Amino acid sequence: MREEVQAAVGALSSPAGEERGGRGTTSDLTIDETLLLHAAGWEPVDLVYGVSWWSIPWGAWQWTTGEVQEASSAFLGAFDEAAALLRGSCEHAGGSGVLGVGVEVRVSAHHVSIELTGTAVRRTGADAHGFEFVSDLSARDFVLLTRAGWWPLGLAAGASFVIAPRRTAREWASQQGQNVELPNLTQSLYLARERAMEGMQRSGTAMGADGIVAVKLREGRASSSVRVIQFIAIGTGVHLRTGAHRSVSPEMVVPLDDLVRLFDAKSLRGARGR
Amino acid sequence: MATGAELPEAAGRRLSGGAWTSGLSVADFASCVDMGMEPVGYVQGYAVMQWSWFMSAGVLGPGMGGLGGYGGIRTGTPRRRGQYVEQWQCPHGFVSAEHRMYGANYELTWLETSWADGWTLAMGRMVDEAAALGATGVVGVVDATRPLAGGATLEFRASGTAVSVGGAPAPARPFSTYLSGQRLAKLVEAGFAPVSVVATLSAVRMLGYCITHYQLAGTNVGTWYGPAAGGVSGVGPVDQVNRAEAAARRIARERVREQLGTDILHGAVLERTEHEIGEGDLSIQCTLKGNRVRRFKDFDPLPDAAPVVRLT
Image 1 (tube, chains in turn brown, red):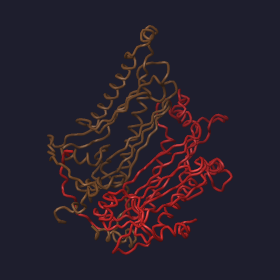
Image 2 (cartoon, chains in turn yellow, cyan):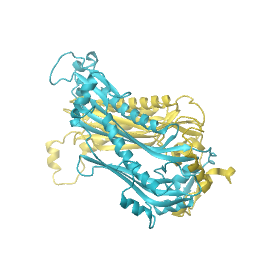
Image 3 (cartoon, chains in turn yellow, orange):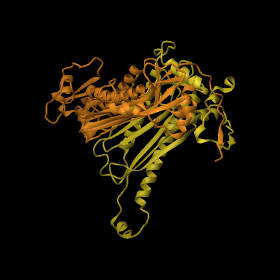
Image 4 (cartoon, chains in turn yellow, blue):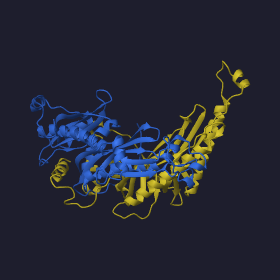
């Protein structure tokens, strides 16, 4: 290892790219993810992004109860546009897919913004063979998924914003001084949930996915009003490529790690380096 | 004190003798020693800048932002080659004090330059200390910014552990990296040499024209604001903001690329912040940081990783 470090330091004396050509790439992957991807035949190409803001007109949140269609539509419009921009950015960089996509969602009274950032990847040493996938899975999850015979396709998303009805005067009076369920809020939460989950499944079906993995939920009160319940569901649509699931068959291990020496760098060299 | 200047006397005295210092965790320390990287000193660099995110006084400064910048843009004369500028014009064709006839997105180059100055000063001073110690590089770099004395100041700080690598030719300038310990070992074993930490800030100001203003305020209701009038009625994309967001990220990536040459940016972190200066008036900033690394050898592919279940 010491010799490797000395060689690395020695390489700093030569100007960048003097001996090894190529253009600079950018990646937000960790070194572990880079190594794992390389072992699986993939390499990072570029940091890519897609951002979209959609407007929600005045009045959408008022004078009504039930789902706020304008807000749900704005979310889906912004999400689809951001995903399309991310894909365009990936194709422009020469990537075949985007991994580890970070999803930032901001919902305010008059607009929704979606921000997608990830690293475009391609097969090692190969030009892009067309666009293949977008996924918020980590490199580790991607490798495990593909090894099991599944393939990511794209991000599936659904969202719903519901204005809870007010209680009647009789309900309000009968519930005073008690810790009891508030059906108007529970039902609104369930309505938002059903619409959002349904929208996400519809989105997955549209991309040809067999299922959606690693679904993340964001639910609760929307910032625009105390009576607005939001439910957002986002996951990665996956497709079974091999006809049947392949068992990964993990081995059980009892780690005997010493915190000081968790890693033996020489193990990276594999059989040839021993 | 500029980068490359002599160290303060006290710093020189402190660094010239006594026990070495290190900011590494015990695990990282042990791992670095194992790699032949001997800690020689815990080095730091600071720069405190007078700071404004909005530069309302920019009209008084040469080529600054604020109204002065906007005025300059409206003449269609960018102040710097390659500076991002876009303009929008009201489609309605009437003049009103409350109706925004023009909109503009433009790059806040003065803010980007100031940030780069502060960051480069702090980082340069840290590396200067390492050089004074005869170090080969600085590992485990941590950097941050914060207001130091009220909102009108911004402190840039950088710290890391200077290390010496015996048996290797000293580079012209010590390398620096956010990595240390096992992560650094894996980087080197994977065939990458750490060159330096890199960071940039991009900033884009968006002054909304009438359509954008209505969209962000939610008042884009009715056909008057619709496609026939060059806008979007009801639910729809806010084009001007989307262009500003994309530009901020594109500029950040381009600026980092300029620092990379043919090297690679590893472990990048992109952070976005937004300042709402007024209704329909935004300033969007992106910082992009990471490790500039250089491939110095090909590495063997990893053996196929075996999935395991830990029994702990």
